[in-house]
Image (cartoon, rainbow, N blue to C red):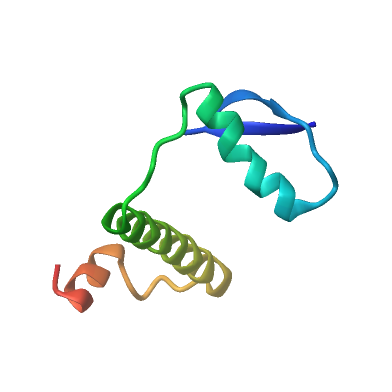
Amino acid sequence: MKDLFVNGVLVGQAATTGDTQLDAETAPHFLKAKELHREVNLVQGMCRQADSFDETAALLNDAAHRIRGDETQKPEDDYLLFGF
């Protein structure tokens, strides 16, 4: 059994077959049966991907600063670099 989450909330468990491709195809059917599935259009998908990239880049940047012990660049300097 595999746990299925929607927005971080456990909504149920689905049977697994050992074939990840088949499992990935059956998960949306399970969510549709519980009326938890919603279609994502191209723009929404692009925005979600951009948000994920932003979060990942920030985490990697923070980790790199901790590893190097780099205190020369302050977080507010990043905003000046990118013009925000």
